[in-house]
Image (tube, helix red, strand yellow):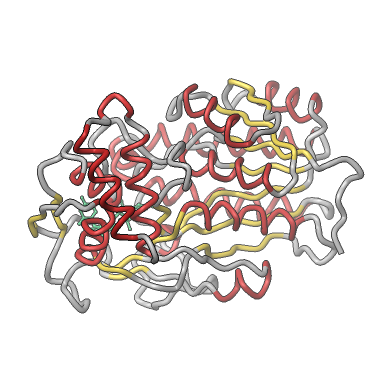
Length: 364
Ligand code: UD1
């Protein structure tokens, strides 16, 4: 049974204009929730904010500010009668966290502390935390169930694990404080409208945006990090999950927190349970974009593991959620955003490539 407030519940989404946040907000609104976004626009743009509003076709409040600003968070929680929080704000680049750990401790940990304190002060007792499969470190056990041991390999991962543990203590201290930490595997793809997605302005660290920018002619070729892993084709295998599936997982987690069987604090994997190698991704993206994506196999990237795969059964059992989009769809939507997201570069070759990919994929 759902214990929803009489009015449509209001959700505060910190970092709601970011790559994952923007998709979460669109799905929350589609599911009937009211949404207030708190975002400092450090890694997001006002253009995205405008697109979110257009896609939602319903009012979405956007508060510009930092989650570390406890007074602002408290004002926001009270002013909009917030019933629950989805906490996505934070820094997320592994390499940057190794170069500047204090920045990560400051933004991610102080942000979580300010938010949890504000929630306690304002009697808001439900939180969905954006965690990561990075907390499993280099675990040999594949696929990874939530019961697998955790291991921190870098400061970014440490902040994710520490926040999960902070939430353990906070939920243990107050009976009416409930939480879900969602451990994301590899979110990729974009909203099918092509309006929101991930478009890093710097050289991308992650595979999908790099492949996509290579298909678009922005990069020469993909450097495949390692061709000698113990995997079928020697390249790293990951559990890529479409960002819209991931966003729907947040809605399911929230519904669960409003139910009468919500436990104190659950950790839940969001993945598909299916793995693809780097070469399989390049191949699928080449088909989706109608462009042969060039690549070169180079040395392994330090810190990478051969395989990372989710055991996604707990999410299905507890939340009734499972991913539905396949790799073809992930590539198609990522590419549509790459093309539509840059109208100034939308020349005839872009349009041709997009039409080609639509033709290739029609019927799939
Ligand atoms: C990375 C982070 C992880 C974070 C996740 C977010 C590291 C070590 N891990 O995961 O903490 O939660 O992103 O999505 O940074 N690859 C290439 N060439 C590239 C880029 C990647 O071959 O230019 C390969 C990698 O070696 C890996 C796969 O592609 O096998 C996926 O890499 P990536 O997209 O960076 O994700 P993860 O490393 O799994």
